[in-house]
Length: 162
Image (cartoon, rainbow, N blue to C red; front, side):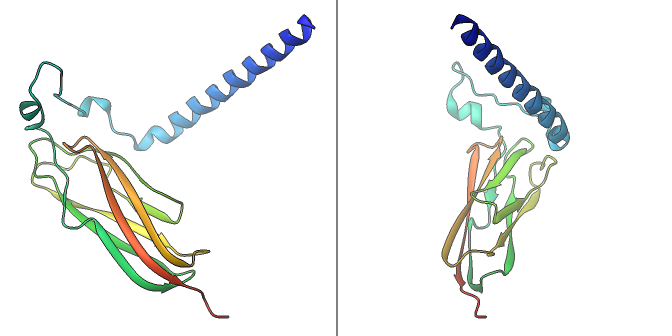
């Protein structure tokens, strides 16, 4: 009985260490589009008042954060460009942007947006295998005062007639 427990534990540890190696390999491969951590400077600390700590951070001020594609037929694709400006005092870094499902794909700048500069995040929506009212969100992770920003899209997808 003790011998079986030993085999089970050894097998489990082998699986865990193997999966960690796979994760590290994937991290190295996908790390090509990652920003250098030295670019991030967050002055917040327990000793600094919040107003002083955040006054020098970047901002991400959007023209709008919601778009309605209106009516579309199942299988159609559409995109919308959300424009934003960094009105802060530091470069804005977007570390990631992710849709709530695979049908909503954001494209975002991978380089710092300097103070005063504007840029866009293009959100593509694919209505394949979707019908009815669709409400999707895109979460954007940044070094701005707010940190995480949310974009929303909506579409009424009508069934394709055959």
